[in-house]
Structures are given as structure tokens and as C-alpha cells.
Length: 148
Image 1 (tube, rainbow, N blue to C red):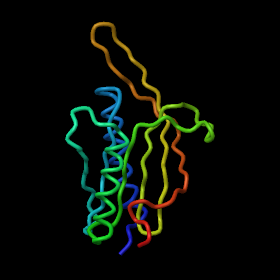
Image 2 (cartoon, rainbow, N blue to C red; image 1 turned 180 degrees about the vertical axis):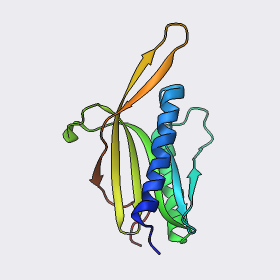
Image 3 (spheres, rainbow, N blue to C red; image 1 turned 180 degrees about the horizontal axis):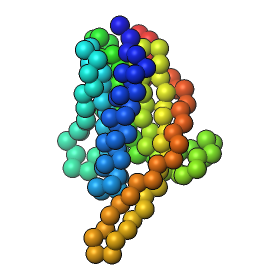
Image 4 (tube, rainbow, N blue to C red; image 1 turned 90 degrees about the vertical axis):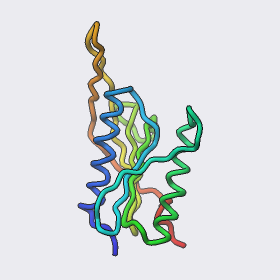
């Protein structure tokens, strides 16, 4: 059974909302994700390699590998992995910083970029406001739901 576009969108929405909250709270985030289980429910996923200050690329690869195993075992219908990235200049983004969500399901694999800027306000009590630009997507090769 394949995930519907609405189900995949709910995994994307979860990642976008959580990433925005992390940017507001601390100004960055390590890769994290969400899966659609076989009941179609969105469940949060995270990775940890044991390091106090892990490299984001290691966490991303750890998540991707673990989710691929879940896909091969038919335990998930879809996946989303979010990363805090610099959007490649080739895409001519309106803002350089971006939330990138690799959204996958059977036969579907896209990077969805959401450019953002952080506006800091307040003198004594600093507050971050996250300004999101229009998202755009790029078709990419599957990692989690790659053909066997």
C-alpha cells in the first residue's frame, strides 16, 4: 500500500512545524524526521550517534539508513527527514538558509525547500521570529524507498 499525497503532506507539515519551533527556540536544529506507519499515522523519529555534538551529516545518514531498513521491512508507508541547510545558489532561492525536507513514499521522492530568515527582536528578552518564504520542490533519487 502506498501513502497518499495527503498522508505525505502531513509528515512534511510535522517536520516544518517542528523545525520552525526549533529555529525559534535555539536558532538551528539537527536532522530529524517523521514516518507514516502502516496505519497512516505520523510518528516522530530522531537519531543519535552517541556524540555530545554530532555532525549533522552523520545524523542525517543514520536516519536515512534506519528508515531504509523500515521501508525494506514494509513497516512504513512514507518518510520525511528535515535538515537545516544552505539552499544551493543554482535554485536561485530568495533566502539562503532553508529547511529541507526529503519527503518519500513508494514512487515519490522530493526535496522540499522552505527558505527562511530569522529576525531577532527585544533588547532584554531576545525573541526569534522565523520568516518563511514560498516552498519549492526538486525531484531527487529515492534513498529510503529506493528499489531493491
